[in-house]
Image 1 (tube, rainbow, N blue to C red):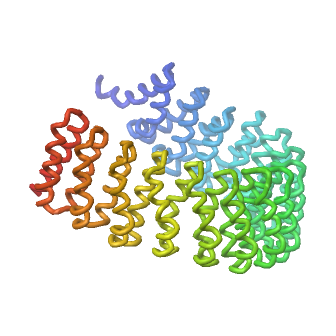
Image 2 (image 1 turned 180 degrees about the vertical axis):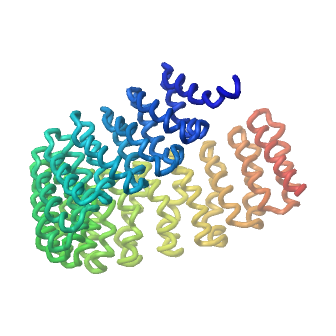
Image 3 (image 1 turned 30 degrees about the horizontal axis):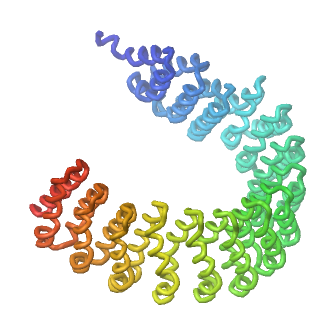
Length: 586
């Protein structure tokens, strides 16, 4: 190809691939748009590439999605912000397509481009684009328009601002529920750009229309608007305009709206202030905690700690705790699980006395719940309670339940207990740990589930780090070494794993005198899996022990394994021998 034609080559490839039947080729070419634009240069990108893309907007949704994403970062390739407006028509076309994710990505890219555009270009190009979309015949254009007002509004002249507010108001009353939903979703972003004077008049009237919509899908999005608007208004305006809406929503006939209120209510408490919270929002929250729909109770239960943090402890004890007691024996396991995941956080809020009197019985009932997820959620947050009531009381009341869970029939519950043991050990102290939990740690090494055995081996290492090598030498190492002759090879593998993890913690002397002889004995095991794991462990010991031990004990064992009939044993033994050579030479 001649030099003259060479710059045409990338665009020719793009055109060919974009019209190819293979979607993957078309996708690849779209993803290379930035490379092609660089090859063409800024002027030809503006005059040839962008118009070409505008004409090819009836492609597969996956290709259009990639195009919408690429164009969002295309300003540098068209000559900078002064030429950013050339990208708008192509993205405007994409805002009209039927596929939601393409439209959303096109709106996102338009917002990114609009936020970088010069004020004059915004007024000349971006605002007219928003108006065209808002007046679009097909609902998809109007849906997209709602997400662009917060970019177009701030730099617009006063007359245009009034027009934009009026257009947005019309979109909120559109015949299509999808448009009203989009308007409700984007109201918070738009409101954040509007002057305070118009916020109270125009935006609040728009908001009130949305809160009374006959579609519950629009009303539930208006709930999100409550929290966003609440942060923009003064507390007294918030009480006057937002609070009555929230109280009504908390009793809405649609459970989905009540669900959204349960999720958002604690955010509104901060907006309205302490007095309205205690008189108006607390009763509303109580209703939600006792709602007849389990989904609403789940959302309300999941926010109980955040809500209590906003209240003073007396209010929480008086109004919220009775509901919490009811939820702890709720008929739905998912409600109890949601409560269990956050209830421990109430202890610091309520203080020591209330926790001991009121919360501990609830913790204990949840720890004995028939569903494992509920028990798991309580176990994983025990440290929050320990900080409040102290370890003595915690161990007296909760430890029997923990010991019971350590032998739970669900392996995930046992696993959660094992992972919590080192933290519990550091809190309980060595004496208490030896009496109550030491034997459990050894039992887990012979569990039927591999994940439990592996976690138990890691647990021993963490305990040795916590209490020190001397304690481990007395309480862990002898019991571990006693299990090495277990007839089942999988259990012997676990012990080998435990030894390999303990060796670095125990130090060279104990490793050489106590652990290494056992590993060498295992190198003569009849099971190949044991033998190649011995080779791996011996390799891991090379940096820990003295060079003389490597020469006299480790290398002879590895040389023997390197002649084993099993191919895997030979492979790992040779790997370990090479590592020992490398160590010696260095």
